[in-house]
Amino acid sequence: MTTLVIEPHTPAGRLRFAVSDAVTATRRFVLRSARQPDIIIGSLLMPVIFVVLFGYVFGSSISVPGGNYRSYLMSGLFAQSTLFASATVAVAVATDMTEGVIDRFKTLPIARSSVLIGRTVSSVIIGLPSLAVMIGCGLAVGWRPLGGLGSTVFAFVLLSLFGFAMGWVGAAIGLLARSPQSADALGMVPSFLLGFISNVFVDPARMPAWLRVAADWNPMSAVVAATRELFRTAQGQAPASVWSLQHPITTTLAMTAVLLAVLVPLCVRRYSRMSR
Amino acid sequence: MTDFAIRADGLAKTFGRTQALRDVSLRVPAGSVCALLGRNGAGKTTTVRILTTLIRPDAGRAEVAGFDAIRQPQRVRARIGVTGQSATMDELLTGHQNLDIIGRLYHLGAARSRQRADQLLAQFGLEHAAGRLVKTYSGGMRRRLDLAASLLIDPEVLFLDEPTSGLDPVSRAEMWQTIRDLVSRGTTVLLTTQHLEEADQLADEVVVLAGGVIVAAGAPAELSAAAGHTRIRVSLPVARPQELRDVAAALGPGAEAHGRVVTVPAPDGLASLAAAVRRLAASGVDVHDVGLEHPTLEEVFAGLTGDQGDDTAGDHTAHDTGRLETAAS
Image (cartoon, rainbow over the protein chains, first blue to last red):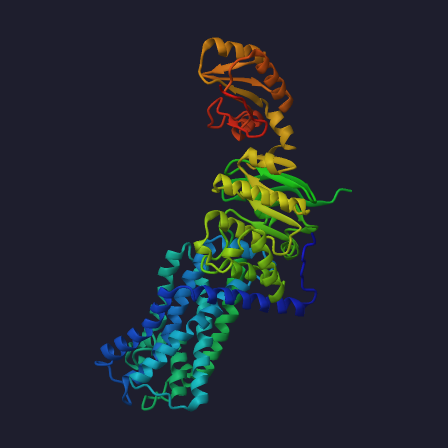
């Protein structure tokens, strides 16, 4: 009997193994999610419900400068789906931490970051089919991206990057929660705060001043404004009064970078130290 | 110099107010099987978790497969296999996918991971279930798959935390055979168990833990002997006073009768049993069953710690080894 000992010998080797570990973990989470038809059906129905519910229930009473509320709303719904994905990551990570599988991973010679990277990257990948459904629903209710193919693709890349960062917010909640149930409850907090105190559904110009400050600097507002700019669905609106919304693409990229730079090391450290 | 696969000195660990381990030291020679024996809460799992790099001890040193488990955990992890008490295989993946993923995480690469997964599934009699989701597996099949996942790299040291708890007797016997096969190929095994019989069947050395300290260590036979009273147990078809007296006389000093069962100490184990069987045959009494009874874990503890446990006196577990059936005409 000879043990197959495979170890990296250089920093480059370590990095290559870490990337391979993250890819393997991601593959595992994507494979298992493909085996949950009930969740897949739910995740494909949600965009339909949202577009119809918000588009017609709110859209019938809310008017936006420049015309079409449903066209205005779609950027908000695209961004909002990243918040729901983040809440799902919170529950998934909290569940992982209560199951024996984490002990198995922790006794393997893998990078400490791989399970969390696997969870957050797979969350973006798993969200792609429902994003496609949401694009279809948007097109059906009159939303049209008018910025050209490049800008439209860039808008979705920006949404995915932001979604990846929000996945780490979910991971942080999942690691702090004492149980999957509490992660479920805690995960709703950012969904509501970030989702509603923003330009997702309404123009913050009409909010009270104190709330407006929060809405203007909410990263959700930046990503929504950025995609409205890229889709050219923001025509006719009053120009933004704050720097963050005057330069929404830069702000989104910067906020995404800051979120990742802060959350990834903190989450990985907490994950490594957590022991049941 | 003996080559030790596991070398631990003065391990201590406290969780909150509970002192799980106080000063535990171990030496496990390469290629041998060591069983940590003890009740729930004795410190078995804590010891295994320290040695497998899952937790850091508050004090002490641990070296596994030649590397420091505290300072060089990745080097230890690249050389060990671990099967814990809880299931670690993903129910929503197939058996083959589960093993393939673990192989890749040991950095075997795609081709070798698949190949090792195939080999191990065949070795554990799971090839027919390779493409099935693990949620369709029976308890015994899941344990075998979990064990297979620990063997992808043919580890230098294999840790098995209560490998047969919750298994039915047939699956347990299969697991024992699997462990023996591994040992015959040179793998060092550290296992934990609550059953003396399991330690007896598998281990070269048994380390008894109670309250976070080692209360005894030695070969299984030594330990049983130290705990006292391996007994010969003779049962009669019916409880007739005259026959009970005849059997007691044949068995010699120290015989005790309970109902239709007579027991007597067997200081020399099988040799005592063989002698007793000859005397019984000579006496001509009609006997239903004769066998050796080893002390239970509870009795070992009682012998070692003076603690009576919650076992009832005389509740021996019959042992298959050395059992002789006589014709009950």
